[in-house]
Amino acid sequence: MTKHQTLFQWSGGKDSMLALHYLQSDPYHQIRKLLTNFSASTKTVSMHGVQEALITRQAEALGLALDKMYHESTDYEQNLDAELENAFKDGFTSVAYGDIFLEDLREYKDRQLACHQLTGIYPLWKKDTKMLVNDFIDLGYQSVIVCVNGSLLDKSFVGKTIDKDFLNSLPKTVDPCGENGEFHSFVYDGPLFKIPVSFNLANISSKSYPKPMGAAGEEVLFWYGDLVEI
Image (cartoon, rainbow, N blue to C red; front, side, top):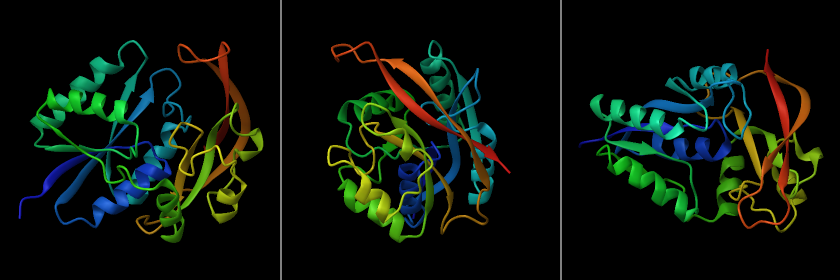
């Protein structure tokens, strides 16, 4: 049986974790390496705001190699093209993602991959998000909220654990997996972890971003939980 030699585009959050969990039990896939994108200036995961050191600890706890791509907004595509080209040369045949239902984002990624003779793998694609997040919880994974869209969720959600109480507290307008960018998370323990990743929530900070073209208002506020490894 020929296995897909798979590179996993890794954010450190719950969707990435659940997609990895599904693939690790799939005999047709061999996850050889994780790839995480970091801001070159802050050394944190884009949008999630998680420090590089915690993602490194996370990969070690999962027993997987980790490639790190550093970029700014102006050189992201150029750097990613180089990463994908190197992946193809290293024998990878596919790249896996935790995307669920953002069609335009998947089409964009698949076009990039096709340029490097790679195939996109989407284990969570089109699955019910309520079912997915409940599966994540029932499997025993532990995850903390590290970022919320302040126009959709209150600051108090930062630092919460994703569990049944968390799901019950979400407004009905918020997707249970945060697939529309409502929130992001960091996974620190679960079935695939050799040891938990230890951290403290140091403080909560905020950052504003320009709204998408056509949206009301000029900026949207995001709240971030600054996690520090211990």
